Image 1 (cartoon, rainbow, N blue to C red):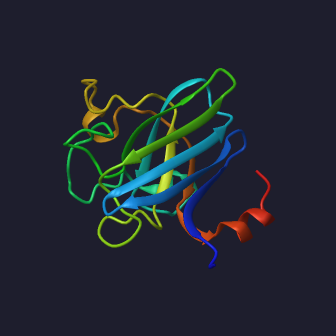
Image 2 (cartoon, helix red, strand yellow):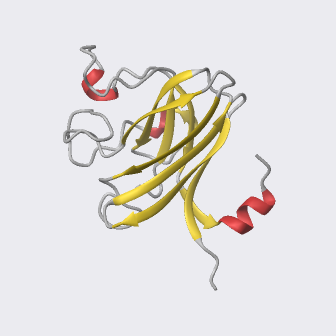
Amino acid sequence: GCPRRTPFCVLNTTNISGVVRFVQTSNWSVEVTANVIGLPPGPHGFHIHQYGDITKGCASAGGHYNPLSMNHGGPDSPVRHVGDLGNIVANTQGIVVHCHEYHNFTLQGTHSILGRSIVIHANADDYGLGGHNDSLTTGHAGARLACCSIVVSQLSVFFSRVRT
């Protein structure tokens, strides 16, 4: 059959590397799998940001992807940015193995995340409940540690040329 074309995002900073993959499971559900190494142990805010532009590092990725102009929230909150994916948790060796099905964005059409970016933050996302001055905008997740653009390629071709 035809090779599968799957959206993905390759993280590659000085200390942090990994791959985030996206699979559309139904009209408004996407399974997101993240395998990351090199993060400080503990929870880290994990978000889709507005732009896929990472030419100036994570600073050029813009804010959280928020086409509905809502306040920040948790991944399963009724009030949330489309890009609010919650937290990923690094173990004591700095390794993340994360898989979650999210229910308010797509890989095509309205609210597509293709061409946007993934950003991993220094601190835990407080889901908008922390009472900090930036809780309702960023989840008080702190500095941007790593980011990557969400692109589509034939994975078999791409990964035969890239070593992670």
